[in-house]
Image 1 (cartoon, helix red, strand yellow):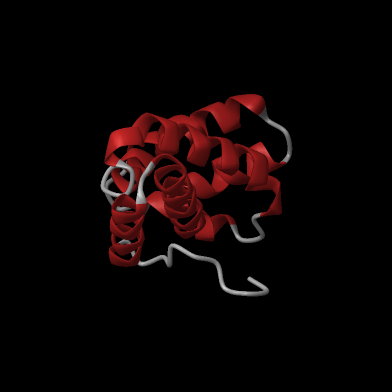
Image 2: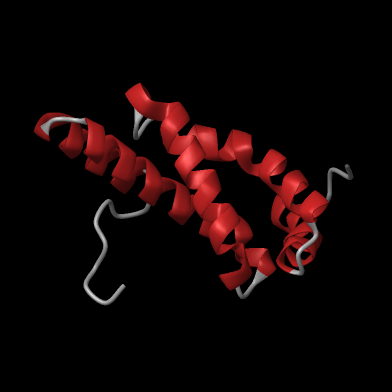
Length: 118
């Protein structure tokens, strides 16, 4: 891969193809973002990282057709991944761990709780 190509530029053609139903492009896209999703989910749900990653990738798979701008793919994946990691961490943890997950989500740049209407 050319070093001058930004990751979101490289992903955009795969996003477009996957949105059109190309299963191989979707597979390539999931493989491409799995390490990124894992890095995002690990500090938020350290005890359940594998579950959080799986839930996040499933949400990416299910929601990809709704993504309007393929160049926004990585930002969208980040938001989806953090949301799913917080959800997994909150589901399996006690109150102290829930607060820690919320703090980790805030450090990741995405709120742990959804705003009304959002």
